Length: 268
Image 1 (tube, rainbow, N blue to C red):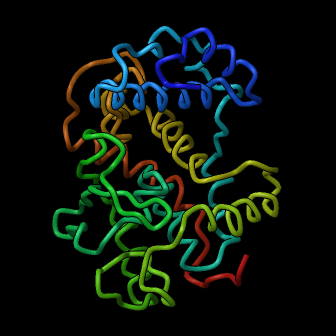
Image 2: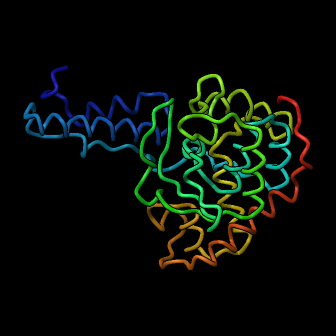
Image 3: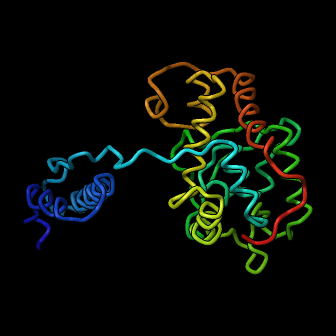
């Protein structure tokens, strides 16, 4: 159909017929909206009909996110071989997105101040900025996490760009989707947690663990590095760094208290 003939109702009807979750339809609508904005800038069309397109339930999930207990998380991690196990520990202890875990470099860590600067992401081998400007922030490191890092550094093969988790065959970061499919989901089944366990399960769980520690909602927002307080809860304010570090350490201690001794299991 010629772009100038696209109508809002036609797009809306087309989206309704797609066998996708409402949130996925909302993402498609956003992409089409951006394409029409480009068309306007290039003077191919005068109007953008997509703001008139409605997606029912586009901001809602079909199911509640899966959340693990610290015991379940630790049981799953113990069934995964290295270096994937350390990647999982980092995701659970820091609440990072998978794309942020894979994009970590050794230069991002300041072990003197016990912090790590999250400043990039990587998806399918492409390095990019983090999800939002609020995602770029320093995250506190508990001393137990530093111990994990140093153990990993002794085992890992150095690479020119200083990636924390580089495939020794390529020198480039691992692809998180492959790790999720081949290691995390398999470990979830073997741990008796069923299907559907993935990277984002760890981030949702981290948020739940923060809540269990009694951390103020403003602290939770900052540790999650959310763009809006509404994503965590409707509370405003700036958290003190000491309070953030205390909340972070409580989560780490809850997780790593179930960590097995330094012996590493075989491949999951």
